[in-house]
Image (cartoon, rainbow, N blue to C red):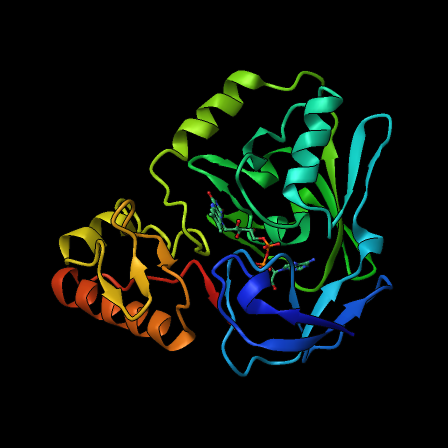
Length: 256
Ligand SMILES: Cc1cc2nc3c(=O)[nH]c(=O)nc-3n(C[C@H](O)[C@H](O)[C@H](O)COP(=O)(O)OP(=O)(O)OC[C@H]3O[C@@H](n4cnc5c(N)ncnc54)[C@H](O)[C@@H]3O)c2cc1C
């Protein structure tokens, strides 16, 4: 077991201090355990279900002839640094995309039309190696069920600094305060940020939580923000957008 204080560990800086089961062996993990990665996309409630996290054993990067094997507990920052150092392409989007490779693959995280699955070959889920073609990847979602222990990427030479610069610029309008990234998914042919702005939620604050006045779709913690304030803002925003536009906003962050 490992004690984690989610008010420090999670990117949005909310949550209780709880005992989390460390997973040390490859295999199926019990159904009642919720597996976390780096908690960059999560809002942990005061009474979460039992939680699990992969141990350091799954924090590694190994180069083979045509592929790069990455343990699911490896941080995006570590993979990006490795790719720069060893001149590998396809990892540029990890620039300021916080998380572990397990969480990033599960969420098919990315920016605009770029996503982690672009360069993926296969994934080790529970005890089974699954080829990319057998996984359904779409916008911030994958069909992967179970624990990801390893992701294998195609090995290509030539880290692309121009692409890195493009990703850096895409981040210019993001707030610096603690958040869990985009709060809602963009609905088809529209932007959650635009809908929140039009309904008056840009900068809207309850207690110490607010929708950022830099980018309305970022729910930010102004310092000491709590779970109840966060979910109240989420519920109010959903209701207002539905009443005005008839659009049901879908959460991108996950409430646990
Ligand atoms: C400032 C900021 C900017 C962000 N920008 C972006 C962005 O541009 N694009 C984007 O897509 N996201 C963005 N995010 C969200 C976040 O980076 C991604 O969702 C990332 O995938 C989270 O990874 P994690 O390891 O923290 O996963 P967690 O948040 O811990 O978990 C996310 C999900 O993955 C599952 N999971 C975690 N590990 C595993 C595993 N080993 N096996 C199976 N399932 C697992 C969890 O059960 C959960 O369902 C941003 C977040 C922040 C804080």
